[in-house]
Image 1: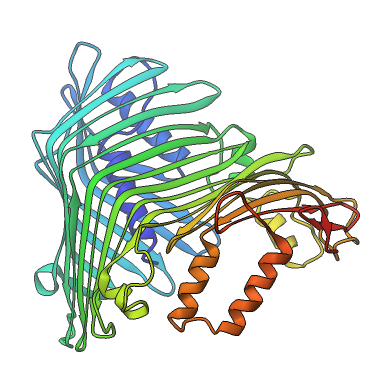
Image 2: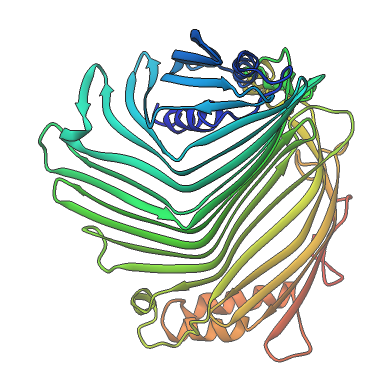
Length: 510
């Protein structure tokens, strides 16, 4: 159940506390509060509170948000003590909080019920809503926003943080804005930026056993942006229907100068993990056309040490990237898909190199592995439809058809050798016999290898590969490749025909 805690806390911080998204009539306090309830309902939450009118101010106390997790028999309840919405007399509304606000996150589950009590704090908070009946704009800022965990109740046992440690996060120089419109869809646009971020989780086993866990870190800053569209009468638990009705999300998150230090002691087994990076980027787009997800980091460094490690491990990579694009809904026409993975300029410490190459025979230049694929497919079931996915479990329903696959980039560079490749294939889904149940492919794969024989010689000289096995590898390279124009280079073109024939450099091998 721990995976639900971050979502619940972020829902509080971004949706309610920051007033993310609003749209209703000419701006009054009552309309802003009503619109928050509309927004939260579109996000899958019910929002309620005790409303008291005090002059131009609408005071809302005992705020409760509840959502149900489908198919998990889990409900999440978020509580907040109070918020004040004040009509300013000029068509705008101010959002006010006390300097500290008690909050709670309760996760009801048959197996692992959790209740977390939190103090939410702001310094120099300002929040103003303006706009018209169908378009509201929010502007908010604070010199600092923080959340501190006060106590945790797990399986009906309460642990005050004063007894077991500390858990808190702070955001400095917080600014944000959001705009929303109401029409056939409820649409929002939001941007947030912060200065330095700090967090710490320092926990000691409350039962007195020899165990500690300390995680601390932060970042130089954060920037995020998000666009979302919600069907007015949509059910967030039925995403397949929501997509058909126009649900869409396009969001990005960028964190600069991030770091994380982790130390834990489990009854004498001690471990340390330190990481840092110049930047981390996350992107997600989801709509009726499919899902696109991207994750990238630059200048990432990792240090590992511990009882079970004979030597400290230090590795770094200038670039880490992952991109995925897949369709989500069944259609009669083919849809695009893509996958790429990059580990760029990967470096290991000399201590690690010394374990496999103590005499320094192999070049220790940064290594790179990168694969990029793109293609088209026809999805035959809605991935987000639970009933359709249950049919897949029976094994009698085909999930989809692969129609084309392009290798748009292949790079493997390490220890003085380099392999490059590209290619393109199409697939005949009406022919499932030529290749034993696989749609018959047609296309070519082009490969070029430089430094391969030299690397093989070094591995034999180091005793890592027996000479007999190296001879077999050279024989295979001779069958599938031809010498290139430069020394120690090989080129190969593998062609597959739909009739089952396979050629290597024009010579039939099947």
